Image 1 (cartoon, rainbow, N blue to C red):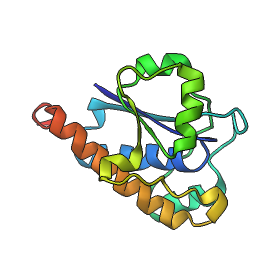
Image 2 (cartoon, rainbow, N blue to C red):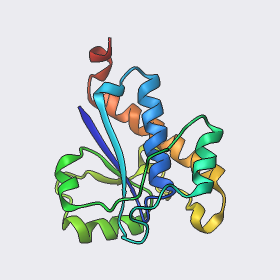
Image 3 (spheres, rainbow, N blue to C red):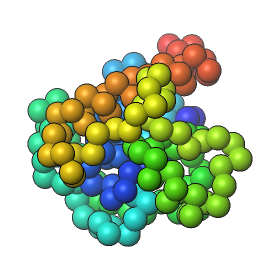
Image 4 (cartoon, one colour):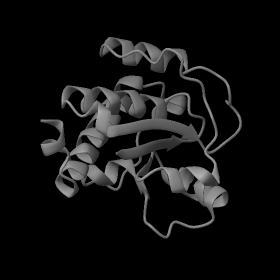
Length: 159
């Protein structure tokens, strides 16, 4: 089983969007049983809060529900539990290192790196542009899934 933890600052916009986009992608690929996908925050600010309403609306425009998702903070134990820890921006990386100490297995990477870009995922908290964030997340998640499938032979186990 491949385990992915998407991380952003508050776990109410970008990382939950990535969580539900990736869940959709693996389901469409017939691989839902091969993956565990979640999201978390580096901060404590939003713990227990639901996904931010504009992010929920953007997901709903694409047929995705994030019902029942509440923000939680990443823990040091998450590093051992998850195989991939895609992050939304460089600030997340600094904050994660405060939580986990180090990244000896190189699990923590910018989501957009999987799509061949060094840019951050657009932060709709500041831009108000949830559509651009969704496009970034979708592009990054598709590239991450492709990368995982190239590395592992999930396709044969799904048949």
